[in-house]
Image (cartoon, rainbow, N blue to C red; front, side, top):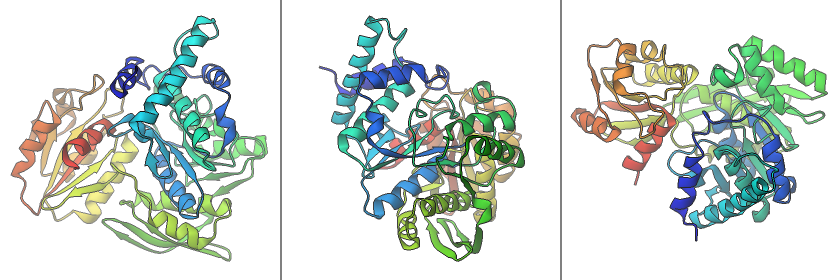
Length: 424
């Protein structure tokens, strides 16, 4: 009998979901057909983008659930354990259900390989995506908020016809797979757009917006841009923001519980998407206020404050730097940082080092992690130390005064490891 650890080990044996990605929809389509096409049993909100798509998904799902709908949520990557990726009614599936889902998908994959229909086992991401579709169909949820994994056009999630497509801000990330320019990256993200299916575009760089508009017009996609909405009465605080989103005669009060000025645009995108789905303003307000999205400017301790943030690309790091400058300019800042090899880390040290009093470079427990020594040249700082393991880095940070603030940031793998060590 397969156990939960067995299922996780097998998934990890399939290889890193980014480096081993095999772009295309043929494998996932054949796998889902063998499983009875469970993805056809639900309604979907399909969300692509570079930064903010996970936060946007969390707020949309929270509001749909608060309005009385039965919901599913599919996101990636996980922070601590793979079942976090598949949520029903706001809760990750149990380990027992995760194993059942894995067994069903794995058996179907092996059968297809034996029949010569598949040339290899589906990837980590394809396997878990199929597990998610099975879970949602089996649970009978009404609507699923589905986050794209990589790109959009050839992503394994792009086998559904949704009620609404949402494209969060497009920026540079995964250039080896998606292209080296914003226009090429935006074209891949725009691949989720379907003829006649409405879309919401978050505020975008002009080059990306040009592409999104052209693809939408070519495919007959009615789209709404959040830039057409006005943000009034904005109040930023260390734990989130309050504002009113206004468009013509519509006004939606938003209390965003996710910290950082960048979350204002994510909350606005979620509010506009929910309005497009027909939710009344009071339901949108209540639902977004109840959203939870761990590992993104998440405060897990006080005296000293410890804040976790998966700022894993330049855009995310710039958002983190803006947050530190706004709320912690007069505090002593400790920075514990680690990154993956496949990330653009060249400019990250230039952004973060000037804001930190102490810098501790470390690495997550992952074969993809950059060694701390490799990160040292990127941080021009008089107080740079290295720690081979995160636990060692946290030990070094015990010297922090109660009024200091410690940021654990970089890879989401590092943030997840920090949560497992520090959050009871």
